[in-house]
Image (cartoon, rainbow, N blue to C red; front, side):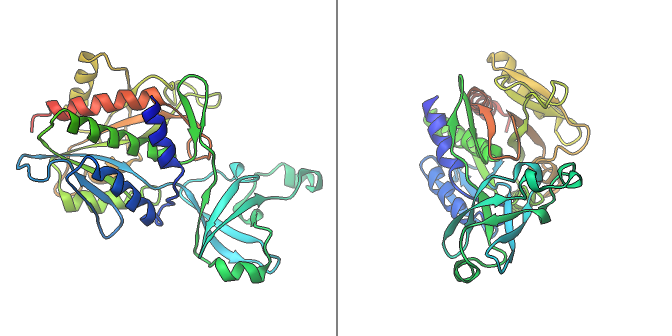
Length: 341
């Protein structure tokens, strides 16, 4: 479990807001080089790692997105404050009192401030914050800021990864660095077991901005089947069992029109036979994941979706059970070994 924790800590500490992932892409490329014979970065920043690039068999692709939600600089104010807009789905209620890093000519740390509740009118206190009500304070003057910060610079959240009770782990960007860690461990396990099939690992960009990286890369690489690894809602004090899955309940295997029925059945059968914990996630419409885009590329790609239960999604205290990563690694490696390709 320490290996999973160390890997996840390494990944979540990195910054890669959607559309600004290039330094992270290079790091992820280097991490996959240890296990894959051919690792490249395409024009968008997607990382494509091929475990057995000389294999002539059909291709199974495992995919996870590397980007994270964040912000973008929209204005430098004369009083030194920075205005911003979100990249990806962000609840403005979580923003006040957050530490952030503005990625300008150099990284600058700031805090998101708001009007103190003591000074708010009743109408103000009864309303949710809007993005326009908030600002980033770096304690720098306007003249200092404009030397290092530009309109359009990305902004990421600052979060210290923490181990919680049992095997729980909390940090920013576990959506979807948890998926990236899962695929890296899957590649390692397959290599150690002498896997000879044609496995490709796609670590895609810009999922939070519209499933863009996976759309381009799956069309370009045209796998015969694809398994997407992402996160799903974890049961918490604010999310009931009807809307999510308990942390520690294993892999959430999706079914619905976005999912190839034979892949769904094969994943279930492997989980049952190997005593791997899993839940069934019903997705009657779009899964909201890269599987939705990949399914309709290159004449149609049969897709499966396996998700990790995650509490407090799209916040800087996302929380996961590391056992669910371990279980999902086992499920994917067995699927790769048994897939009829």
